[in-house]
Length: 434
Image (cartoon, rainbow, N blue to C red; front, side, top):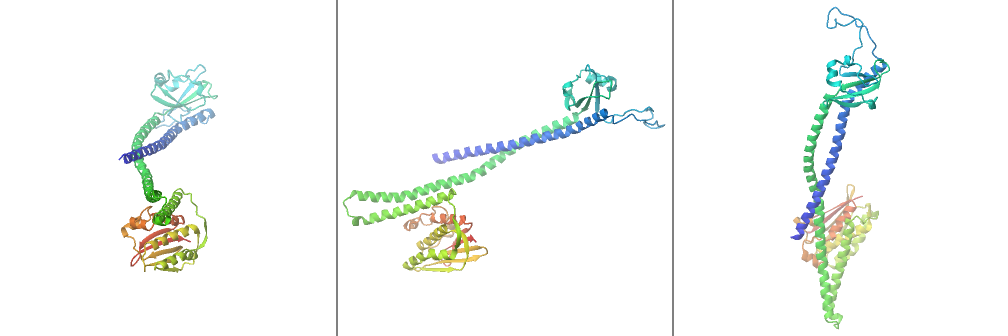
């Protein structure tokens, strides 16, 4: 129970780490997004006010609007206007302040006594922001965009300052900031949920790999322990009677050698799979005539089948040349043919067939042996899987051959599948692109 609890704590710790990393990433991205959007909205809102101030400044300094004669109408809303005309204010939002050298407002009468006494009586001239658009606050309540500049066309003042009220813009910005805060809180809650879901999905392949590795180590340890125990027992039995003749202990020595060979094959297969998992093994591809290779590999197996009173036939009809690793394809065929011989009896048949299907070379290795139960076909390529462990041990199987075969086919960009042969036995079908 200690090991599963340790694994559970470890997995939970890693999942929490992934969750926090995802949450930090989401929060960082959304924070940057908020800042960009907020500043862009604020800049857009204030840019119209700034444009109005700059246009008014250009009008004053360039004298773009000269005094014009406005005709006196006999009737209508403008009948009280003077014939002399006047320079109209193009923007009623803008307040014009004229400052003398002492920093006193010189156009008190023009801006109105009420406005002056309530708001601008204590307003001070700030020469540091000359010709710069700035934001100022009056009475800690009213916000203005303002620009201060020299006005050489006005003899009554040294400086002219233009102010435009931006309380409406500030209200929009404040409301937008409040909306962003609400959205940020909701986003954080959604990020927590999304981070939890993503962390669980991220942990699934890790847990799967952990379990597969633990299963692999456990099975490998079991497979190594059994032959090592046999070899140790037989050697200890020989040591008990050191003067005994070899011929009297022939069975012990033969069994020890058999288990040693099995250990050698097992370690070779384990090394192959370990290199496959780490992607260290690279294929040495070259043009290969697949029918010639199969005929060469099958030749010794045909002799073995004949000695065991089994039928072995070839039906090679592909005549295709493919880019492949000859050594690995040789290993693949040996694995399949070796299994076919192991799990067939006298009078059984083994057949190797090749043909082309669309742009793929098809290789079929079929037999009429004991076959595979339908419910076990999905596990047949799993490492250390053996349908009948006792029978496999008798035939020297380790349950790694078909795993290696699948890896070889995958590395060649093909597929391998197993199906039931009719009327009995098994058929392995391999597809390799040309």
